[in-house]
Image (cartoon, rainbow, N blue to C red; front, top):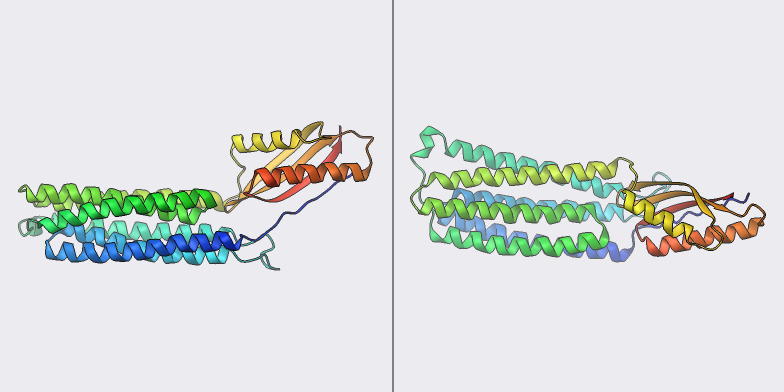
Length: 302
């Protein structure tokens, strides 16, 4: 029976690259301003928690640069050495980001533990009101940046941008911890400022773990979820001339999907007719599933 193999390999569009870079540049500007403001507030107001939070925001600047590099490499066209494209480089960027985030979190935790040691605990000072103001500004700003980045990460199905979004969320959560610690320290318990730094450490390490696991899963070939595979099969089965689905395999390659599909058709049709059926299946899947980069369609007799 006729067999039609269709390769829809296409590089990530210029629009994808420009949008992702635009989002990351917004993050770089916002984090730079927040990091500077929180650092000055932490120093002036004698708040170790706010200084730790400033370090977290500063790490966001570096992470955004990593995301930009990952997106630009992932957007390259296929070449002789990378015939299936470069999408996985974005996952590599997310892994690097996760490692950096974890190191920053552990550093903050280590500093907090030193401050809580018996020798240093007596020297802890009450943080000033400026530290509280900085914490509130950070919570509002970082939460806004989280939702802004998350919207585009979902729209582009970008693991790098989603990692960056969760980095913003972890910073917002850590700022809540800083706010509570600073407020408690001003109420007469200065050691709570250092405890807040430990809470920040926990949030950062947890976020780095989630980013790392998500990136690793996308680096390793695995099938799409059952809902997506069923939708793919239903789409193919609904095309004219298709009498059933014999075989369907899918795998994720970075943020793209590859599909290997066997459809069943009348065994008496001509080769040209089977090619038409394959083209119809291909076109339908391509139009309904923008994340599908490569489709191989085979037509077998019913």
